[in-house]
Length: 329
Image: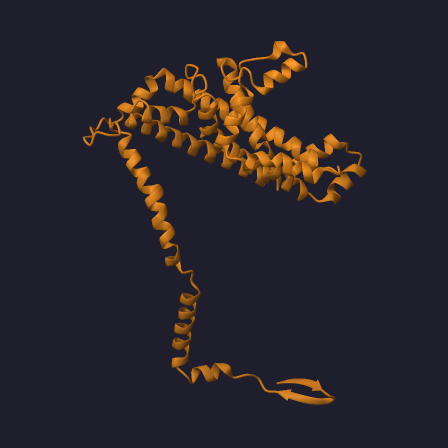
């Protein structure tokens, strides 16, 4: 018995005997369980809504991938309906092919160069436009604008600018730097780095936006506390800002590495992968072997190797960066 006082008068509340009531209704427990199970089924996600997307994904991705694995072990030329099984001969030929080995190293070199330069450039831009300058909003728009242009359009634009009589050489001549005039896309020693420069120019603003989002998420109080403790700008960035930018670094590094390994548009538009394969990447070599030489089986084998490289590099990078993020947090 419990006693409560309401409006000055004692009120007595008898204890509940709900268990007796439930016991007097033997069908109530089974019915309740059935109702609860029905409610769970009603609230369960309707997986069949995803069925159309899953079918489309299977038709567009899974089926072509499976057929690609099949053609990688054949000598198909893309036209002949008769296909001969050759096993791992295409992959063995790839190892013996000096051009293919050279192109693989080109691809890895381009991916590393783009990743390092683009992210360093984007971080510097983000630090600049995150300051209190009055034109920071306008600068953000202009610096990000190249990233929304189609890569093939940007590549053809820079192809004209970097030509022997292009605007870059003309500008160097006007300012008295005639010794710096180069055939930027015709010199085998410069062409690949010119491609890297074009990619960095276009997507440096994209990396800037991701870094900028990370910088704006850093609490200002932390910087103020570090400044009070006597930390300078460089020390504050290295000890305070940099660790908190770990998620932004993870996203940027993943995107730039994968994009660098799969690079095709800019290379094909700027140099066509020419100059004795000096600028070829795996993507351009796959295209040439398939549509120029008619070696579809060999080109698909190259594509399989490219897929494996992307999967291994991206997975390893994700694991390392995720572990670093957890260590920081």
